[in-house]
Amino acid sequence: MRNIWTIAKREYDHYFVSPIAYVVAFMILLVLGILFAADMLYFTQNSFQLYGYTPDASRIVSPFAFLLVLSTPALTMRLLADETRMGTMELLLTAPVRDFELIVGKWLGGILFMLTLIVVSLIYPLILHNLVDPGIDQKLLLSSYLGLILLAAAFLALGVGISAIFSNQIAAFFATLGLLVFLWWLIGFPATIIPTGADVFNYLNMKAHFDKLISGSIYFADVIYYLSMIALGLFTGTMAIEIRRWR
Image (cartoon, rainbow, N blue to C red):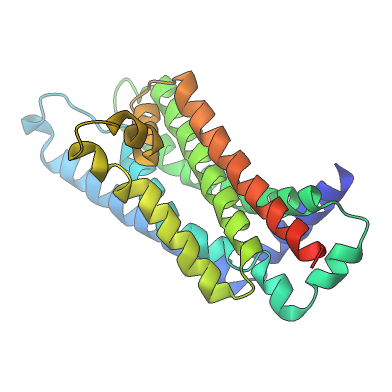
């Protein structure tokens, strides 16, 4: 556990000296701020036509999830691929660190950085809570942010797993981006056109599970789905390091 925390802290600190991390954080918070301001302006100007409808946390969480699909590959592409490129992977492989500890430490560092952005984004629901009467649904807020945290954790785990496979950052970026786009948008399409087996594609559809969580419904199957994706990513990364160790 100590090795995992040491690696996680190192990676977390590295994000704050990395220009890519600052660009990702700036773009996410900027886009969320612009969308939030536009929503507030719209609802203020059309309050009488909306018959009492007020915005909720999904106005922030939904675009945040979309931005995670595009930004997570930039955060994970260097985690292990860059170690291989710089030749420091050999040092890590000879250090008294287990392969699983290395992968989990890298992933945990990314999670801590993403949690920082998620906590900062809470300013928008808090502002919204003070603007509407009697306030936003706090249970819906909790389920929405639970879904966002699980989604970010799953994305980062899959990104770490792919980064462990490749030695080139650009290849890791596009492979991760392709996988996330497939799981978020494309995998649900076959369910609409095939007569049998639609349930399988619906279950694998990551966006469908996320939509349930941000609607306020927390189902055990949805949580298990994201935990399974996290386990799959970490297992893939561990196996990739294990194979590299014995080459």
